[in-house]
Image 1: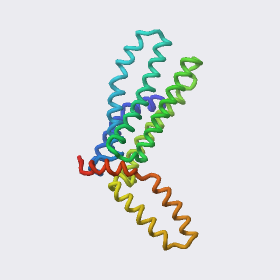
Image 2 (image 1 turned 60 degrees about the vertical axis):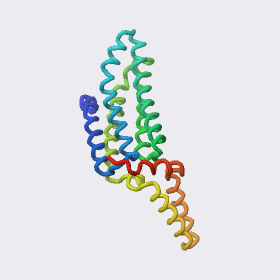
Image 3 (image 1 turned 120 degrees about the vertical axis):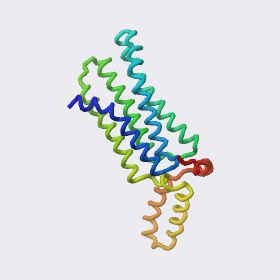
Image 4 (image 1 turned 45 degrees about the vertical axis):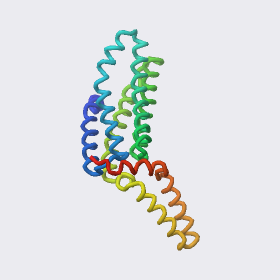
Length: 216
């Protein structure tokens, strides 16, 4: 069982690459989905190739210092990936979709797990939670792959339509509220407010429109 969870890492790049190809074929444009998965493909390639050189580097230190460098490095890689994702979305003016938010949360959880693993091995020196931590990591990785394919089946509105269409829907929805009875209008207004909270800003509209024709 433990060997199964350890082996999941080696298959991540295949899941990421397959979902990226599917996303490009379906959406045919730059959006939060394709940017997020492309970043995760690059992240996984980097992590796979840096592991051995990093290990060769840390063995030149004593055990305690080596472990600290090892865990801090993986925590830093996750945080840099989050920063890069946010920077690309902001730079291109693309709305940060549900998949981006999920990946951001997952990467933050990985940071926490690495900190917990480091504490277990470096501070308490019990190594008691190694299997639990391994199970958590594997579960999150499976969840990430599943969410990639789920978002292909049920994508964000922004991934299918340009942001202007989402805003037009918001305007039409709000105008339709005038014809509803007061109680029903209040309920619909709550739904409308929840919908509009996730819309891109005007700045995002102006910038992202320049990329509407940037298709793969």
